Length: 260
Ligand code: IPE
Ligand code: IPE
Ligand code: MG
Image (tube, rainbow, N blue to C red; front, side, top):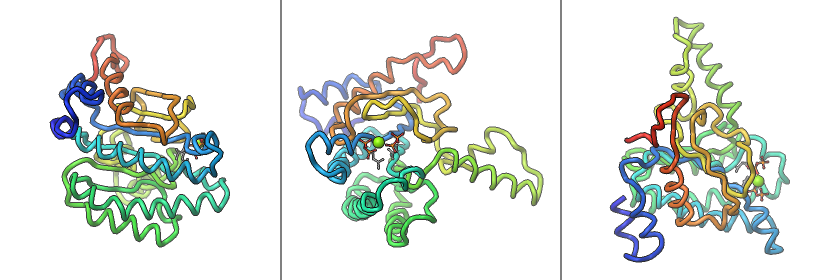
């Protein structure tokens, strides 16, 4: 939190918002469905890929701010298993943008101590993209700050299927207890806390196959803002909104967001 405040000018809007956030009750893990790039471009009579290009700026701001807030994890939905249905040219542009992003952001990741990971069925990605991902994963693996998960060729159901397959294989080889913890431990997000806050931009009221298991008790924040227009200000507002929620986890206690 201190790192974020030191970046901001006293009196500016984001400074006031950041000061209003209770650092003891920050979400440990934020997950974001980055949606609305195509509509952002359409509104400007631009090709859809211009929206994806513009969306990279929002990714950069969001990642840096979460690192400066000392969050434990940020998971960004970049490409779903269903997104292959899009025109080949759009999909290829997304891979190109991803490679440019990874190369350009490595110094920033190192500066902020970000540990990068990619989650999803990565085998299906073009080898050149996988090589670039592996490079950033390897170069950032000793960092101790924010864990940044980029969900690529990701599907929540596919992830659960993969976990169940791993579990049944282990059960075949020996005895294994099948309970919630066992499934969580075999998801791509093993070892991380479940997301406390799930943000979706562009106003769609659906989860589109994202982190189905992990969001069981996430607080939802849906904004009409299109992803390329999503700013640090709105991220801070979403966190403040989260801190005003009562999380009861099925109980009766009007417990507010959990203390870390
Ligand atoms: C989200 O923006 C980015 C990806 C799914 C890759 P969209 O491309 O879905 O934008 P809209 O929803 O068509 O506006
Ligand atoms: C969800 O957005 C996937 C990502 C943001 C990567 P979509 O645009 O693919 O979702 P739907 O089709 O509106 O549900
Ligand atoms: Mg969309």
